[in-house]
Length: 140
Image (cartoon, rainbow, N blue to C red; front, side):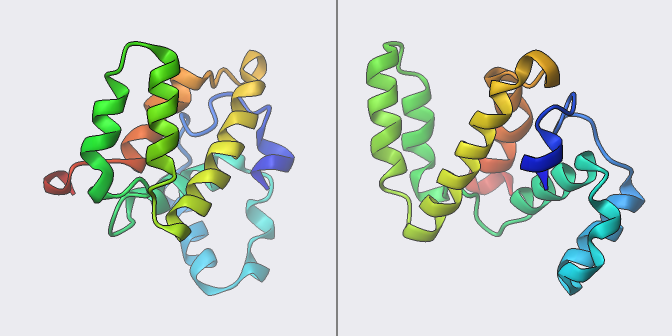
């Protein structure tokens, strides 16, 4: 749905949906896909549900076990070396985490390609979604 209708939506993931709408969508997702039609016109609600899902995982998608490596790689100044290190860490993610992370990153790259319209530059995407993808074990 987000690929179809959300790519040009300004502030996707940044502009929050109403709390009651988000709660209703999450309940519908828990029950059945047949009750989701009413949310098809609200990409902010769907984006909010995705953010909430990521934040409520028992372990972050980027995993506690790789927390130190992610944070150390983020501090590498040389961009080529940083990308190489991030790639190595990605490949150390458990299989299912890696598959989900890869899908999410591809989606977010498409979102950022429309940043002239949606205002979601890679930096803005990182600001709003980063805390939902990686956090220290004692923060959760």
